[in-house]
Image (cartoon, rainbow, N blue to C red; front, side, top):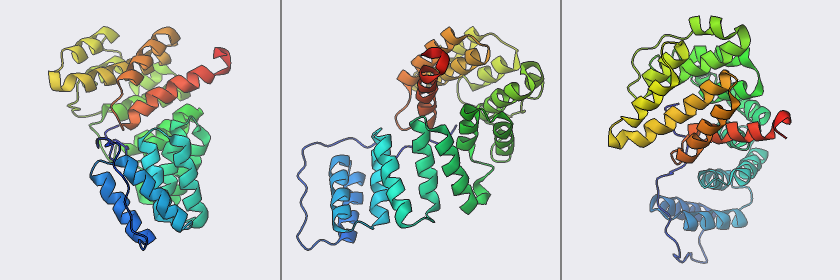
Length: 284
């Protein structure tokens, strides 16, 4: 979808900078230094400082949340889950931490756990329910297609120009009512300006063939081409998967996973798709 759920993924790593703290630094001051280090682009220093905060105050939920986000941004998803879990053990009403942990569970392929956390988050933040497309994707991979269809239908109230939402609604609906009926019930959208999303919409609508999607992506402007190719491979992978063509689905998903933008949730979707495919009983 449109939101990238990374944690300052664009910062560069500056290696070898010594961590200097005073003996009288308080946990609050150390956490402030960790935040400043991250803003300066030194995630290694930020990580070490967060560890110092936790060593000084093992009940500092802010430090566990901060370090969990940082672990997540570095692809250390199991460690992120552990830190978010610790924060919730200390303070069980941290709504946003449930949401963060749900995303990390998803990235590990823990689909049921991700839904449980997203549901808990939405208990505290019910106003966020229509826009919670991440839960919709988890519903899809959990095989809870009717609930996924409902989630993506609700997202229309948030953005009715998002082809991705219409496609995920179709993917859930096709499993619930069949491809032909789902095609006729595809959500209507306005204009998604991202290349090649209008072609992706037409593909799932049955108006064009897959090669038109790749043609649009490869002809994108140079500054848009990388993102366009990622989106093309991701949605072609999902298209072929919905058609039962596992070979082409795997090839496109592998391309999407390799081209995934840093810190983008949809890139993690491609990786999780491959992980779940690999672990499926008929793939072993």
